[in-house]
Image (cartoon, rainbow, N blue to C red; front, side, top):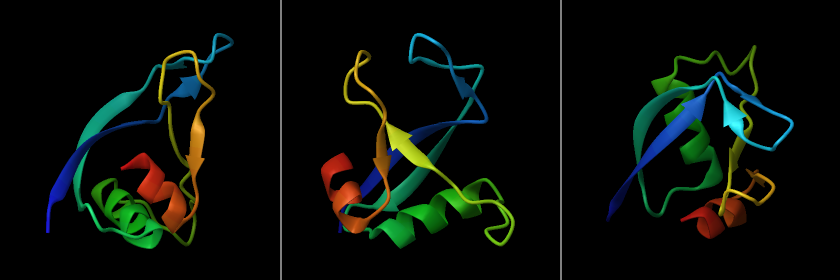
Length: 81
């Protein structure tokens, strides 16, 4: 089963031009066949997030001018991949 390497930008903010700024970047590896829960857990584990206290919001942009897309389900993970 193939694995994917993804660079995750976090701890930043979206500015008025819809650009994510003032962020930190770190890589994670997950299986291409991962479910939403598995992707969520990989990210939470990598960043040592207590999932009882903090809820992650996973978003990405296809093109710079697009609005960020939210990954919130298995279908969202498949579209992202």
